[in-house]
Image 1 (cartoon, rainbow, N blue to C red):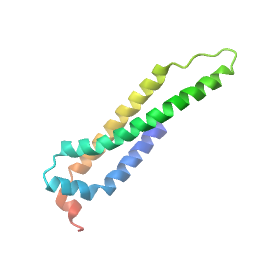
Image 2: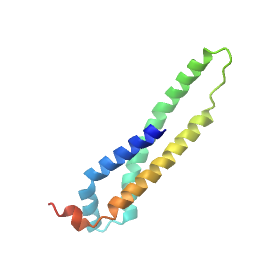
Image 3: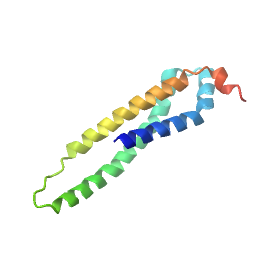
Length: 115
């Protein structure tokens, strides 16, 4: 999970650096920090949900098949995957919200000065 969270941080930093000017323009046109945070967080959450819906059934199936080969084996509870998804989701929201808030607080004049 640490590698996944580091990947999320890297994607968030990269995406927000590419969208600094867009955020500056939206702020000049009157968007609030909350609106900008919601707009960018929504795209990350949609991608996270798609990844969870694809990865978790496949991971459960492979784990179940692998554990069948052992003499003493256990069933992998679905709740394990649900709690993992919730944890990754909350961590993603926290990381993205902090990074977006920092980027949205930048003065639009500084981000648009190059144009």
